[in-house]
Amino acid sequence: MPPVCLRQEDSKVKPALIFQQYIWLINTLRRQGRMTLDELSQRWVEDEVAEGNPLSRSSFNRHRDAILDMFGIVIECDANYKYYIYNPEVLDDDSLERWMLSTLTVGGVLSDSVSLKDRIILENVPAGEEFLQTIIRAIKQNKKIQISYRRFGADSTEKTVAPYALKLFHQRWYLLAFTGHHYATYSLDRMLSVSLTDESFEMPEDFSPQQYFAEYFGVLTDETPMAHVVIRTYGKTPNYLRTLPLHQSQREVATTEDYTDFSFDIRPTADFIGQLLSHGDGLEVIEPQLLRDQLQQEVERMRSHYRE
Image (spheres, rainbow, N blue to C red):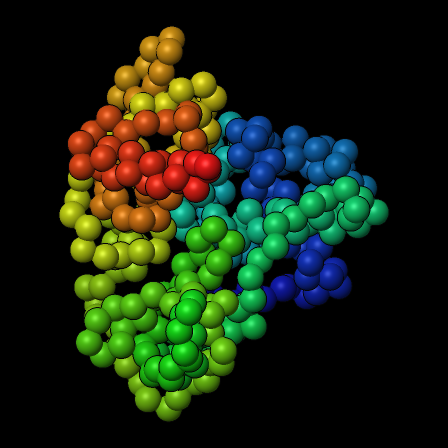
């Protein structure tokens, strides 16, 4: 992603405020659809985006360019001089741009709500963020890193790996790396130290981190075979899955008054099984039978903890 340079006029405004103006434009056009510059400026004034000052054409054009650079979002103008987001699909996947937009949006809302800090409850995030800067620098420079890593229940070990990608999953950061022999995933909160080495590496041109994880849910990528999974959901569970699909292959295949069936083409690893179990009695596996048996065994093991 190219660096974003503030123009001379924008440099008089704090960068954080400029970013919030970008976010306002994106979210307004996403909600409202097509709007003329006058309509945008009127809403801009009403929302006091720039302390009640109108949105000038020059500022709007500068913001359009910056939004394209930062998020890859194209704001076009139609024959009726109405502006709209030309490629909304950019924000419909698990891209860095969508994550940045969401993070900046939430950050802006929270920064304007400091007085409500005791009434906004956030989730705890494990340690590990202090290593992000070093790892990202290594990824950009194609440099290997040396990590001191301690798995749960094991002694710490020293490893030198080629960092390929970062993945955020359930409030934890994970590093996908190549050890020289195989791919491995490391949780940043289990890293004791990370240092940049002078040793370079070349990431294969045909390797895609997105494709590497595409057949899985979560970060476990073992040899579990592919399966066509059908689950039956009850109560409010279908609505949760419709609004936040578990996997890109999720399809709604049957709907009745009593239940809704969803299908997945996925490798059902422990991460996926754990996610299914988290829905309790709102969900059951219909097929394959092997996976249904696995969940039944897990439920039986859970029940054994509560028997007298």
